Length: 52
Image 1 (cartoon, one colour):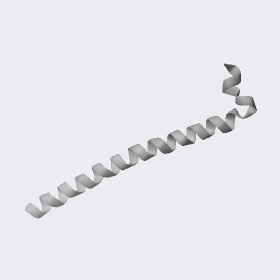
Image 2 (cartoon, rainbow, N blue to C red; image 1 turned 90 degrees about the vertical axis):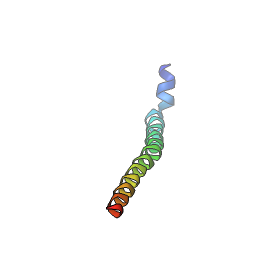
Image 3 (cartoon, helix red, strand yellow; image 1 turned 90 degrees about the horizontal axis):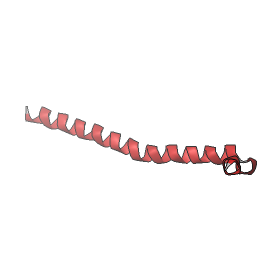
Image 4 (cartoon, rainbow, N blue to C red; image 1 turned 60 degrees about the vertical axis):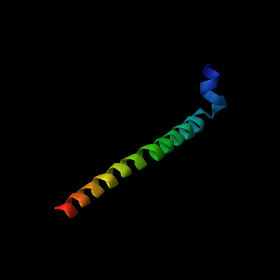
């Protein structure tokens, strides 16, 4: 098991690349969701302003 985590001396590079890939995947999920909420909030505010 230790050899698996050590990965023949390349563990730092391998685990770093896995970490970066995970961060990018999470950003691709989270950022559009946040942007959607912001756009919907702005649209609701604009509709309320137009109706008043």
